[in-house]
Image 1 (cartoon, rainbow, N blue to C red):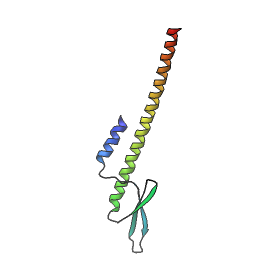
Image 2 (image 1 turned 90 degrees about the horizontal axis):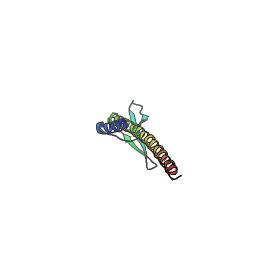
Image 3 (image 1 turned 120 degrees about the vertical axis):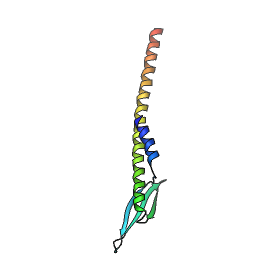
Image 4 (image 1 turned 45 degrees about the vertical axis):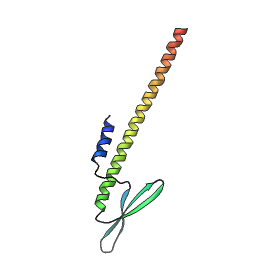
Length: 106
C-alpha cells in the first residue's frame, strides 16, 4: 500500500502541524505586517493573532497539515475503491455459489 506508506512517512517527518490558514491581517503605515491564523473546529471559527517572528513557522506548520490532509484524502479514496471492489467480488461469489447450488439440486 503505497498511500499508507506515504501517509505514515508524512506523519513521522512532520516537524509540527497546525490546521488553518495564515493570512495578512493588515499592514501598518510603518511597513509592518500583522498576521492571523484562522481555522474551523467543531463548526466554530477560531482566530489567533500571530507575530511577524512566528509567521514563517506557522506557514510551514499549516502547509504540513494541508499536505497531511491531502494524503489522508488519497488514502480514504484508495480504501473506498478497494472496499467497493471487495464488496462486488463477494456479491458475485455469492451469486455463483447460489447458482451452482441450484444446479446441484435441480
